[in-house]
Structures are given as structure tokens and as C-alpha cells.
Length: 242
Image 1 (tube, helix red, strand yellow):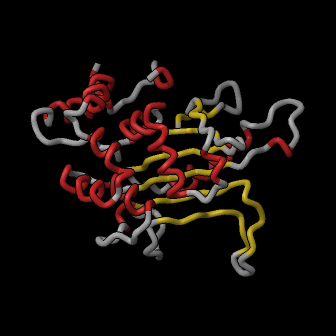
Image 2 (image 1 turned 60 degrees about the horizontal axis):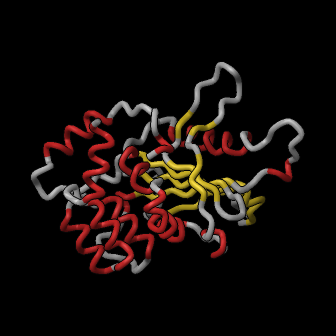
Image 3 (image 1 turned 180 degrees about the vertical axis):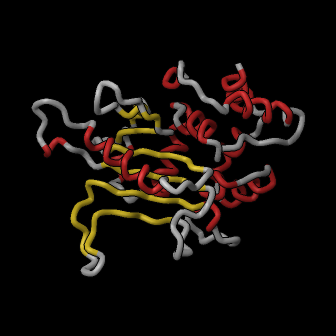
């Protein structure tokens, strides 16, 4: 993919070697890996799958999904000596809302603060010389987690925003953070598209994916592409091992 050419992934060789070991088995692409997730969902050829995932998580006007533009995932440095940060997927909707998607396999002590920091950067990078505050577009973060981040709640999907918790009144929707915790998925489907997509991302075997695809036809195409022996699987394997 041109979008990510030249970026270095420290785990790519190790991941590629592990996938090659399974090359002669019934293996599937590990979408929970941020590298595979990025290559899989940020590919223009898979845009319909990306849109379906977004619709399952977000509550946006239908026409906002009609023009999804996948953007450079680098966050601009605030100062000359700052380092670039790289997020998994960054995109713009038709109304220019900014959506940031990130996969996290490990829960670290500073993770919540880092999520808020990235959300803030996505706001501040919109303002340049001569800009007005009215120019700021909504920023939405989707954080997909392999483990529990939000203690004290059994729900696998949360939406966080600026709000008065006592009055239950939202100050603004300019920022929103969605968390999707895969380890909280119930064993039995709740009948939603979100459950099926979360199960698709969490699946570790072809058998698990087959059950989801049989239940939800929208998952059938990405299920096929997750097979390591599929043409898509071969392309991804070649991309991360070359």
C-alpha cells in the first residue's frame, strides 16, 4: 500500500515469520495485530468493510459514510523537535469529521492518558495561522482492546465525551472516545452488527470465523480474505516479510 510505504514496523519480521510457519496449515490473518489491522482496513479495496465496521460502532448521519477518505496516519508534531506519532488508521468522513482507529493488545498504566493526548493532538493539528475555532471538526477515537480497560462495567462498548455526570448533560460532541473491549464479548450473540465485527476481530481460528460468516453475510468476504492461503493473505504476507 502506498499509504504506508517507508514506515518501519518493529514487529513485522517476527509476525511474518510466525505466519510463514503456519503457511501450510489452516491459518488466518491475526487482525488483532495493529499491523495487520492497518493493512486490512486501510486498504481502499476493503473500504466497504471499513464502512460497515464504522456503522456498527458510530451513530453518524448515513451520508457521512458516503465519502470516507483514508488519511496519513502521522500526527503532526507541535514543535520542531517533537517526534511524529503514528496511529493505526485515520480517516475523514464526508462532513470532515476526523476518525482515529487504534488497536491495543496490552493495557499499560499510561494508556488512558495517551488516548486523551492523541485525541487532543487531532484537534490542535487542525488549527493553523489564521484559523478560527469554528474550523475545528469533530474528532472521534475508536480504541479496540484485547483486554479490559474499563473496570467496573460489563459492557464491551463504551462512548466517552465531555459531560456533566450528575445532570447527564453533554457539553459538546466535538470529541468522543469509543472503546471496544474484546475480552468482554458475551459467549452468545446480542444480535448486533457490532457484536459480529468485534467477534470477527477477536477470532483466533477459521472455525470461529465460519460461524460468524454463516450468521452475518457481511462478514463472509472479509472472512475469506483473512485466510492465509487466500490471494489477499498472500499479498499481506508478502508485504510484511519482504
